[in-house]
Length: 219
Image (cartoon, rainbow, N blue to C red; front, side):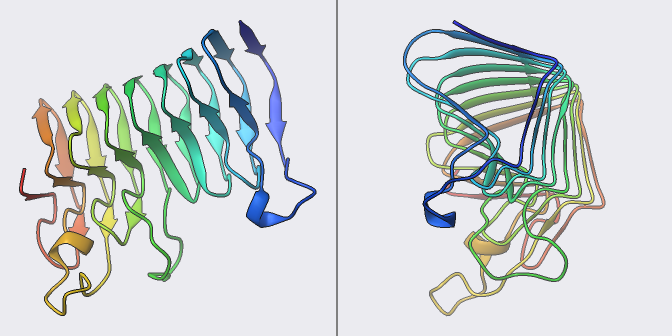
């Protein structure tokens, strides 16, 4: 098992350059991991990656200002408290995750930028994801879902949470037609998945094409 307590993992990179940039921490192979009251910041390749059968518990930890993805999960993840903010993209979930009381803010595109492919500025989900008692604010994407992109096969539940001031920007979807699949869903874009939103507030979200709050395509 791995335990990380009251620690800072920051400004790490790779001697091979940006194309081989390493994450702040990568946890691989079947075991358990507990990360508590720590900070993952300004790591060139991203903040934290949990893969290959890990059971990870992340508590009151802040994942901020990392290059690439702040938190990449293809394991079993529970994150309680803390934040994911200011990363090139916030969270990618490909397996199972629970976010409870997490602040996910200001991830994705920055400033006036619309170039570069950023799907789901705050979260990109293709697994089973439950978000409860959390806030997703000020995230920005140009490939659907300013706050959350729920991809094919993804199961997304949003409970007792707030999604506000998120943006889905962009233009054509690559077919010459208006970019519905590219820039819809200021808060949530559902692409061939399942979404349930319960007792939550979606406010002041915007999209360039359709669905200022929620857009669904073949879902």
